[in-house]
Every structure is written in structure tokens, then in C-alpha cells.
Length: 458
Image (cartoon, rainbow, N blue to C red; front, side):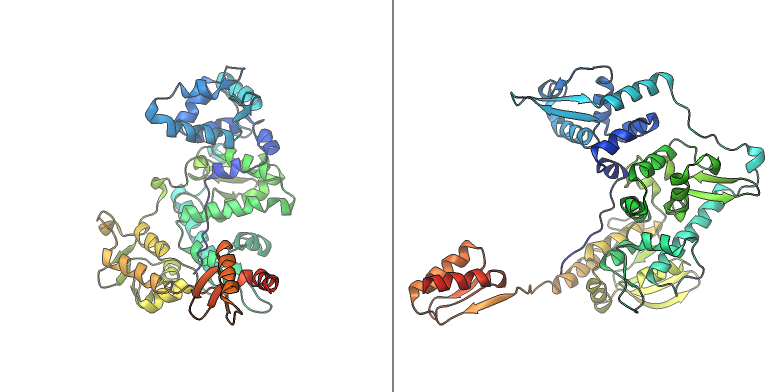
């Protein structure tokens, strides 16, 4: 079974994928330069600061002398990252000697920022205006509800108890690659869609943001402008309200897009917009102020709710309808109480999950990441007999691999037969041969070439 995986990239990987011209444009903003510096590995930060006031190139051999023998692998990672982000420019001269120097735009603006500091283009709203804003806890709860509603719409709009705050066109952008639809049939989850539902909440968000930015040019928006705004948010204060009137059109649209999917560590968004009587504000969240931090930050994990027993029973202590629908993807729901969902992991339920493109490792990872605090401290948090059996049931489906092929027999002579076998071996397409009866089976992809070879032999 082919495995299709969604790779939820680190935000800085997305920045590094920009063309060189757009990356240089980003570095015109001093805050972006500081955000990039924050995101670098420790050794890469050291290199940037050491070369900040050096205008001439530094040879690769000279930089290697700065590193101890056991730190060479970290040195290579640091250099690669700096080159990917175009913080370093690499040059190879005629003598094949490699040199590095800081990106001039990045270097100049970072120097200015370290010496003179910088002022954000907006200030937080006075407390006398925003005094009636909801608390951060209330916003987190509302954002979580909004995110769960979005995921329920993804599974089936019939499961969602209320509508999302997004237009149909915006929902299509978010759902691209996760849903497919034929003619008059209702939209169905794709393989990527099923895998998306089992992702960690932060990973789901990063996938949405990545897709939103990747498809921005289709909407006439420069992806560099979106990335610039999202990085700039990392310098705002979490939970503080900022005036929407200070945003340009691109930033306003971003605030109405993925930024409104939720907020905080249990949500899926980077900001929330609150409408007042005369003013409107947006409130950056923890995720907004940590966009340059690694995606796998363990501090942002939500509390688990799943207990798995050795008899393949699964107990989910949750009142969420979304959790129930996700568990239904790979288990059989036996009964549901107001705050408890009881399931059974069966061979049939897992086969159904495998057919939808979900892998055994993704199911096991979901159970481990969402383990209830009472069992999360155990090693392992999911019984080994359960994880082993899930993997075995998946391997049952992969015992036979189907390969299109052709059978050849009736050769006029052994010489022609052996020549055909040699030709198939050279093409790495020989699957089986019977020397006594002069028969062979080859991959179907070389059938045309094999026929031409045999015709030439005649």
C-alpha cells in the first residue's frame, strides 16, 4: 500500500523556500532580521554575530578552525541553515576554495537594529478602550471551539453543530488537498485528509498556514508579504489588543484567514479579531509570538485524554464530538457517556483505517501523544502488545505486492531465450525464469522494448 504523508514544515523552512529575490526583500525589515536570528541553531547564531562587523569573505577552512573535532556535524548543520536562508552567501573561486560572507542587506539592518533598536509599526490599545475585552482564557476556549468546528466540517458538515466564521471560498483554500469531490457527490476526505485529522493540533495549523501561503499567488498576494506579517507578529505581546486600522490590505486579509482559526496552545491560529463599537482589534497569541520556534515545541502540547488497555479496549475521557469522530477512524465505538467514550480496537476497524491511507505508525503516534496524564508517565504509555498487533495487522495487507508483468514462452532456441533473460536482467525487469521449459516473466513496463529485442533476434 503506498504511504502518503503530509510534511508539516517548520515555519523557517517555509521562509527558506522563498526565491532569493523575495528573501532579500524580507531582509529590508529589521524585525524580520531579528526573527531569523532568533530561529537559528545556537552555533549559527554565533557565526552571524562573529561576522556581523566583518565585511570581507571568510574561507570555509578558516571557519572550520573555530570548531572542535566533535562539533563538526553541528558546524555543517549551522552552515547549511545559514545558506538556505541566504543569511550566508557561498562563493567558490577558481582555486575551488569556498568562502562565506553575510548577506549585505541582512548585515546592515541587523547592525542598525542591535545599535538603535526598532519601533513596531503599531502599539497596543490603551486599557481604557479594551477594558471590556474577554480574558485570554475565554478567547482560548472560543478559539478551540472554532477549530473543532472546522475539523468537524472537514469530516462532514452534518457533524458540525454550528457554522464556521469563514466564507465558502476561504474554506476551499483551507480544505485543498484534504477533500475531494466528484460531480454531484458529497466531498470526501482524501488520504491526506485522514492523516491530517490524526496530526497534533500545532502540526495541523502549520499545514494550513503552509497551504495558505503556498497558494497566495493565485489570490494575487505576494507570499513574502504574508510571511513578513506573520514574523512581525512574533514581536507583539501575547494577549494585548492592537488596532486593526494599522494593518494594510494584505495583513487584514491574513487576519481574516488562518489567523482566525483559533489562538493559543490548544487552538489552531495565530490571532483573534474582536470587534468593538467603534474600533476593531486583533490579539496575537502564543503561537503568533513563537513563529520562529520549532514546530515540535513540547510545551505547546495539549493534555491527553486516551487510556488504552492490554485487551484492546480504549477509554477516551472527553466530551468532544470531534474526538469521537477521530476515534471512529480506526476503532469501533461501543458506547458513549457524557464524559467518556468507550471503544475497541479491532482488526476490522484497523483494516478500514489502512484502506483510507492511515498508517499503523500514525495511529500509534496519535494514541501516545494523546495519552491520559495517568498513563502518559508510563513507559510505554500504550501497551506493547497493542502496538505490536497494530503493526502486524498492517503488515498482513502488505504481504503480496502486485506487479504488472508479461509471460514469454515458445522461444525458437535456447540462445534466443538466454538472450532475452540477459536483456531483462540488464533492464532490472526480470521477475522469474524457467530454464527447462524456456519461460520467463518480466515487468510490464519493458514489454515494448522486449518485443523489439526479440524481433531483432529473429
